[in-house]
Length: 145
Image (cartoon, rainbow, N blue to C red; front, side, top):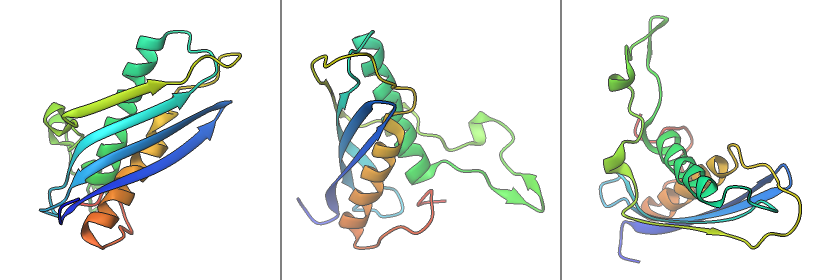
């Protein structure tokens, strides 16, 4: 990949389910990195609502992007600085990857859990991509806090 760009991958399993996430990150401006592509593959046994699960995994990737790159609370003298959602730097639509794929594995048995299944894998994949793109392994999150 070009300088300042990298891929990161991570895997997570819980509640008889597993997910893998691969992201591509553009960190040519390390203070303002952007996930440009995300690919998620999930095995949840029997997906009861496949379209709902796909949407849930998309949301999980956005959560992973947020907590890794930008979302956090500032505490000033014991008080939270952010007074509303508008002040909180959670990923918005403009931060979503332009390329996004979700792949569900064929049914393999009873339904497994999928609640927050994708968040840890997405967050770790973003952190891994940032480390490869910048040569600096993040030690605290969010990165641009």
